[in-house]
Length: 141
Image 1 (cartoon, rainbow, N blue to C red):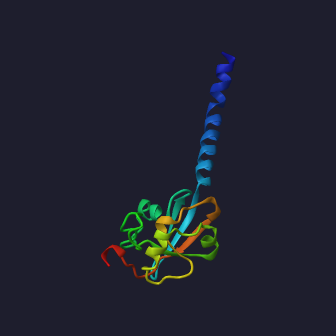
Image 2 (cartoon, one colour):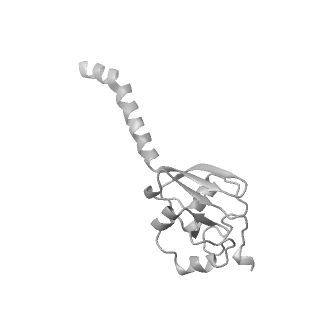
Image 3 (tube, rainbow, N blue to C red):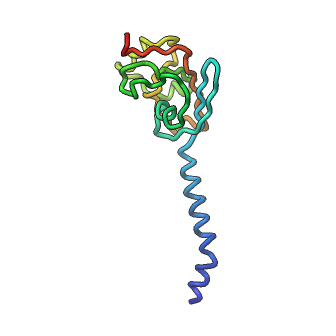
């Protein structure tokens, strides 16, 4: 009986700590993703393991035509330009991605397809990507 009363008095404290620890762990997998266009900037929270295309879709960012092929490497509408530090941490692009990038307008040395850029803990506290003002859907060429 005494133990039950002690448990009842400490229960709110025990569970609030557990909830806080769970919330802190979930936040470890979050980072700030900033999409910059010629006229707008969109700052949203991304999750480690998601692609940039996933972030655009999940956060309903109004980037017209972005990811038209839904990540199947059949277009270059999710073409983004990364900062050098983020570009350098990625593996080399596969041949299919390179073929689509060849068709991308405003191509740069740090260009990648957003569907192939997976967010990682190395991107913390955040990543900034530049979205070219022109898109070209390679499926219609």
